[in-house]
Image (cartoon, rainbow, N blue to C red; front, side, top):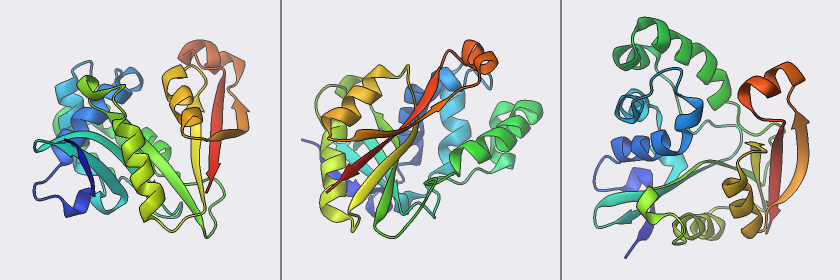
Length: 197
């Protein structure tokens, strides 16, 4: 039976298991750095700020995670030296440069009472079993925010969009990708969603 806790309250260090969820869920955007999920997991395991994450645990295994920040704080902190150790000097350096901007954005317009939902991930064997929904409901019940946002979801990520809509999120902004980049990354728009209690 799964239960939800803040990651920094875990009796074990959950980072490597969280990194495995991260690698599994975000691999399509990280293949430039490595096509090996284990290498990606090891390279990014250092980055999680555990006090910003909620995890679902089942039998001592992390089976789902979601970060929730105030929009000013970051849920991850990249260490270029760690990235270089696992990805090599060149690709580790590039990951540190390009992903730092991508990962430390926070809410585009942070304000008191607004929370940012980030890094939603579920173990492949637990997908479709309500794990992410259970974590999200725990966040809603245990954080002080009245509004939650999810920024910049790729319009091609139908599974994520369906999940967020199921949770009650509504689209509030759509940012078109420039045409030359859209063909390359196969994304036409980045969509932002919000949920009000």
